[in-house]
Length: 186
Image (cartoon, rainbow, N blue to C red):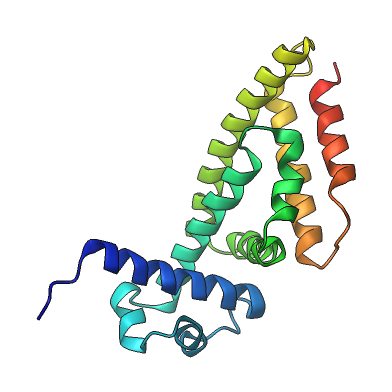
């Protein structure tokens, strides 16, 4: 029997995670079954359970992956463009719907809440640094404090993501202008 490579195992795991993310975004965590995920992935139930011993393990993995991706997107390079990155991605609404469910689940799952807080702390530190750099480049005073400003910006982006999740297809332009104003206002 040929040996299965790590690359093959990683690809199968990613295939299951992608299918689960899509199913969870469409149906929610509670209404999704492992059968739905198996059907979407095109793999067998045995393959799914080989990588994830339970639906809860799969939910945790999808949440971890989604949180990391979403927060990395909103804190990369230019903060004012964050809403455009969230809205403009091919799967922006799907990702927003999944994030809305993750926020809700984190409210009742201490384990997930801890992971969300960890990722938020990382995103906050990145956003704080980006604000400081942006203000230095623009010659804007450091006050108000970049740390507090980063909290406001992450809250604004969370609200924008929730609106997108509910089907609000409003252009991100107003949010982009608001973020730009918050960063450069002394």
